[in-house]
Structure formats: structure tokens, C-alpha cells
Length: 485
Image (cartoon, rainbow, N blue to C red; front, side, top):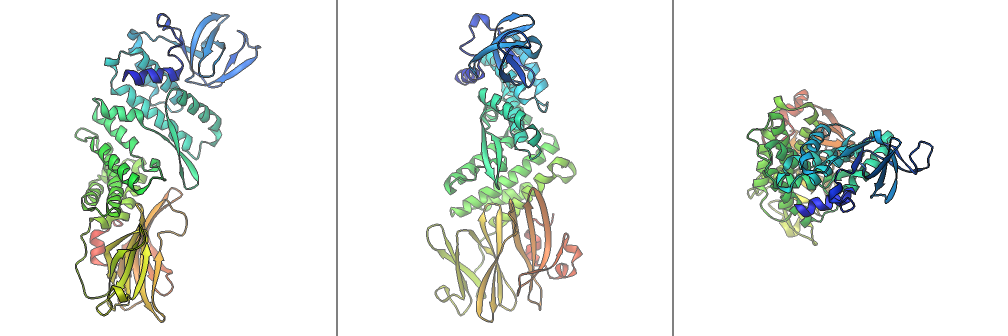
């Protein structure tokens, strides 16, 4: 702990350069775009532009200006005294610094300033007196700053946010970038939140830390399958540390939603490794079902849809292996490394003489296979990614069997699934449910798809609005799906 605090202090520019007997000679810039001048007068040359949270060593005072040295920029100069806040790093002043941290913690736009006060508090407070509160404040401010920088509405404040990120980096706060759908997402690395979970902390602090550490948009997209499995396993462990006994209901809902999405992803990773995915997927479904919709905050509506789509994409992981049958069905075998080959067979055709065959790098949910009454078509769920599931349709045509792949969306969605919901009796049609997230917007629809053209003939937001859907929907689908919720 001492080593970490010393490193944080050195990054803040107030460590070894400040003598122990001169602990009070420290100042924190309280405003943005403060001029560091070469002399104590307004007309003097500007040496640099300072931003809120910049921490300076104070060396003197003249004419209402403070003579300072900026260790981060390795430059000295003068700053108006009114634009700087003197702080004492004596141990007895630590409670006052923590009081300022509490005030700034939830103040939008003051994250860099708040982080500087956290750094000052960590220097001033005795090691045995430092608890989880300061780290929880550091983490919440660092995360909020990263969210501001990633917002699509941040263009007007780009220069300010970039400067605040630079100040935060100088204080030892690590913000990394993750590329998502052609745009950069900034994410705090979560070091402070990890310390919250390692220290005695309140349930609310633990809940906020767990939620921050398991954000789905901050999962590195370039992880190998093994690394992603380990990462999801770690996220499961983090969420397990956030107990819910005394939490307000809206915060319990947030943990349930996050746990549902993480467990669904973990179930997919386990299934891809050939491990049992049922326990993780059963827990994902349980967490989603436990959400109290009456206590769901307005800002959590999107999180609810996000969790539902993630659970819906992997829900077949909760189903047992299908029983052996004699009719139209599929069997799988290993193909090239990482591939699964699907063979369509029936009572007269075995895998060696399959009716149709195709290989995929996706996860094949054989329990999802459903053939129509005539034995001329079969629907199958294939999941290439943890939050992306396709519908494969095998059907007999004039030229023999063909395989069509129906994706959740033809656009570039962030996540989604398309699932079989039933066969329309006497017609060459199937029913399907579709949920997608495109450009941050969720869409859910229930459709009638023509098998000959694969065109959507009818589409509604509610299955009860479509009579053919109400009459022909598959009973097993209705019992298992999360699309109806």
C-alpha cells in the first residue's frame, strides 16, 4: 500500500521534490486554462496553460502571484494566487482534504480537480487511516471522466477533456482505449475499484466497484478465446464479491442485469471449450428473471435490454443435449482446428451420406434443431460470438438441399440474435423473433419469414398483434425464450 501511494504521489508531482518540513507548500489549480507566466504580472510571457487538477510546488509569493514549479512539465513560473488552492499535506489536515473529495466526487466536470485532491489526501493521511472511501471516490471520478471523453456529445469540449485526461494520467490514473465499431471507447483500468474490493468496504461501494469493473463495453475485443474465458471468469468472481443484502432495490437490479449478461457470456465461453455451460446459463436466466421491473430506474432501461439480448443470444446453453431421434436432424463433428461441421441426416441418410453439410467456427446449439412436420426444412441456432446468434435454415428445394444463414441484422449491430419461433402449418413459412442493438438503439420484432425468398412478410412489435404468430408459435419456444418479457 505504501509503495502504491508513493508512486501515485510522485506522478502527482508533489513527492520527492517537496521537502518534509515544507509539506504545506503545495497548490492545486482550481480552474481551467490558467496561465503560467514568466513574471508576476499579467503582461508577462505565458509559459504554459494549466488546467484544474494540476499540482504545483509553491516556492514564494509576489504581488498577488504565487511563484510555482510544475514538476510534470518541468517548468517554473507565476500563477495568480486566486487561481490556486493551497493544500497542507500534514497528517492532521487529511480530514479536510477528504471533505473536499466528498464534495467533488459527484460534481460533473470536476473530475481532474477531485483526483488531485484524492492524491493529496493519500499523501497526507497515515497509511493505517486510509480506507475504501478515497479509492471509491478516485474510481468513480476516473470512470466518469472516461465516459465523458467517450461520449458522442463531447466534441465541443474535446480540448478540455483531453487536458483533463492528461492531468489524470499525471496523477497515475490509467485510461485505456478500446475500439468498438469504428470508434474509440475510453475505459478506466479500475485499479482504485480493485482496492475497494480488497479493503473493508460498504455494500454500496462494492456494488459500484463491481459494476465499473465489469462494463461490457470495456471488454478488450482482441482477447484470444482462452484469455476471454479467463477474463469472463474473473468478471464472474468480481460480481460475486458484491453482496446485496442491504442495497436499495434499484442497485440490486443493476447487479442482477450485469450478472445476467456476464454469466451468459461465460456460458458461451465454457461451451466453446467443451465444458458444461448449463450452470452459468441457468444463473444468467435466473438473474434476468429476478429483475424487479417496478424498481428499474429510467437510466437502466437500456441496461435491461442489453442484458436480455446477451442472455437471449446464449440461452440454448441452459438446455440439455437433445434426445436421439430418427427423423430429420443434425449431427456435428470436428472439422479444421476451431471448426465444427454440421451434417443434416434422416432415417435413410447417415453422416457419411449427409443430405447437406457445412462447417462453421461458430458454436452450434444442436438442442435448438427443429424440423417441420413435412421433413423438408430444419432451423438451427449457430452462435459465432458471445452476443451474436444466427439462424441457419436447411430446406429442400428443386435442386436439393440448401443452407441459408439469416443474421440478426444486415447492418453493423453491436449485438443481437434471430431465433426460430415456429413453423406455419401448411405454408412455406417460419416464425422468428429478432432482437438487435444498432447505433445504441434496441429493436425487438416478431416476424413471419417466407422460406422461398427469406423475405420478412409480416413484422410486429408484439406477438399478440399477429394472429398467425399467436396460433402457430412453437410451445417450447414460448416457454424458453426471453424475447417475451
